[in-house]
Image (cartoon, rainbow, N blue to C red):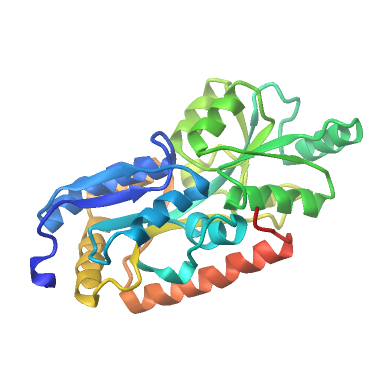
Amino acid sequence: MAQSFPSKPVSLVVPYPAGGVSDVIARIVSPPLSKKLGEAVIVENIGGASGGIAAQKVLNAPADGYLVMQGSPNELILGPLANSAIKFKSEDFRLVQMIGSVQIAFLVRSDMPVKDVDSFLAFAKKSAQEGKPLSYASVGPGSFYHLLGEQLSKETKIPMTHVPYKGAGPALQDLIGGQIDFFLAPYGKSHDELAKQGRIKILAMLNSKRLESVKDYPAVTESKGLKGFVYSIWTGYFVKKDTPEPIMQTLNKALAVVLEDPAVKSGLDANSLMIAKPLSLNELNKVYGDGTAQFRAIAKSINLQPQ
């Protein structure tokens, strides 16, 4: 069967509307993947329910490898914990290849009178005391970015207000417009351009040290008040768990070749993705299992309840 896979176009399902980092990644990966598989690879954007609608579509289809989900712990591990309408479990999927890790940027509206993380914390504390807690965006209730906001509020003991969006694109628009105060966001090069134009501020990256690719922005560890607030999130390609092993092997090997493609490397690098090294299916099972345990622990620590 796998010899004939694929014999028709493959859909790459992105769980967010066009315009966010997820969509950009899919459009960089799809042309070389299509070339390697010898069939068209079509990017399908399906937003909503913190990625749950896209994930469910993949699970409702046959386990034949023709629907590949571009996902992260956000949709596949946290979604089921946060959204009572989501009926699947993380274990219903298998990871067929990693793409890389996305750095998290600490973005605030441009007119906020702060210059770094520590002045932000002082301003957030003062605002909360005046009965106007700062608002932060996420890509949906229980998404990683919601958890980060909750964790920030919990660690600093400063009340903050959560405002969920359908994706990072719409959230960013409201940050530019000043309708929300801050967004712990998956970093993309567009943020750098917006910051240089003075339309948003980037206070820090949630990295353990300052990285060359984003050297203009401090690592969060350079602050006094949030030294340990270091997080990133990985992205990968998933299929339904019952997909035949030979088909998974075909996708795993094709994506491994794609990750080594110079155009893909430069495209992902230009979007500040820290590129993963290709792994075998056995290694990926372990990565996904460990990731599931780690993210479930964070959700438990902030007492995340399904809505």
